[in-house]
Length: 88
Image (cartoon, rainbow, N blue to C red; front, top):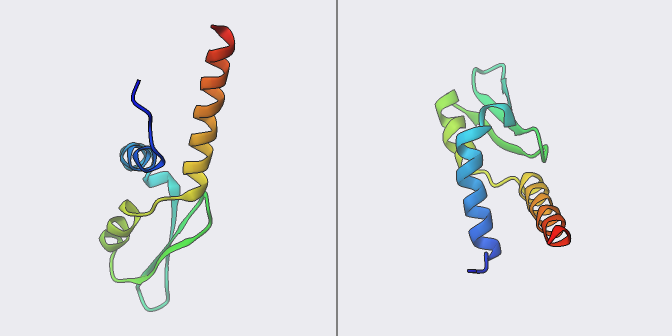
């Protein structure tokens, strides 16, 4: 069995989350001047502000590594492995 490093886990997670839940992970608001902001709904970080278009936001969101989602997924995997080990 090949050990999984934290870096491998984070990038694997990033690829999966990019495909699955990107749309539901962010809140977009439009400023009075017509620009956009986006906030991650898991870690509540403002990911981008004063962007010209929603396409700009999407590009920035693709590169956001949410620490809350990563930690949650990692802990879930650890619990799954521990439960599996107890059964065997």
